[in-house]
Length: 512
Image (cartoon, rainbow, N blue to C red; front, side, top):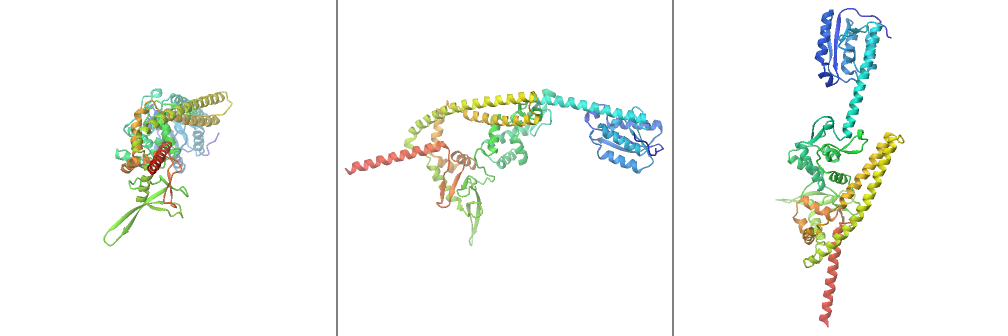
């Protein structure tokens, strides 16, 4: 026990008040109540209050700046003999911290009085009582913290998000009856997911949201598009990072959320533009065949005596490549390329039969694929069960469990996404054939007359992995394309060969 070096005499004191939580503020522990208790004690026993310290919310775990200010004040002012507090735990609920401060005050010759009970640190017995009081307060605080944490964990595992809701949501209810609903801003975020699925870039989505009156940063948009909360799911440390269904109004279905993650991770092979100038639809869709660098665009100004002319160009940005092509040439040759996939009008009825047969084969393949995916899903579910059992029996630690669960849940999400892709409803494919025929008969014209957004959709439909430009031949090279258009191309070539053969036969007959 630290002894007084030189106990200060006199009736000069300071008053210290502190609350760390709103609960204390609302349950008889307010700053005003503490101040009144101390002032009544000072008046009754003839103390003169020289200064007030604290008076604000401050953490229970650390003494903070306000206690430091008080300590420096009483150390400099030798006439201060006493510190008045309503209770000892107002210093700090961390007992070691508060006990340290009581010892420091005693070493300075200052007595601390808990005015609510009349206890003080002048005697060894009083000091012991004060420290016992602090230890009990810390135990009570820890007990309430454990109960709060346990209750919060149970709520979140049950799907009730009791923490502050993310952007676009508000809460209703309490405890396990808490539900999160989309507010007006949140309802607009539904469009963000739809536009992302349609192939729009983040900058385009931000522009469209701004037009609707929702102004957010690119960082906020990224958090929204990547958070499972907006799909009605909760992934939290209390759930050991397992995905659980939340009591949340979703802005997007979970399947579409997974599709968005696939797009954002780059697995779709789509090239999206940061700039959206309608004069340059091929930006970043066309790549240089020699260095795989996406083309960018620029406009060059040429002045004559009386007028100024502007010329649009695409170029490869790779240092030393020096590939520059006029936009006019690239657009005309792109239309010519698309025109190769147009089916001759006289063959449209035969092409419809071919499409119908192709759809039937695709349907059979999808059934087989779904069988394999369901088997894989069962295997993953069994792996998850095994990990849970091993964690429950103490064979693996929490960190290993959480890592394994995150890995298995990621695999499960991919399988769910693939199952949804394979779950195409092909029973009404005959109704879709007229639309397919219309597209097949004039895809070049569709692209020429389309808006920028629709041009990109057509580009990504025909060449989902982009297309290459070869400066040596001043034309495109198609490394890969949508399999449907491969079918159209083979069909058209076959028809052309038959037509050529028939023409040759006719010539031969005429020659006879």
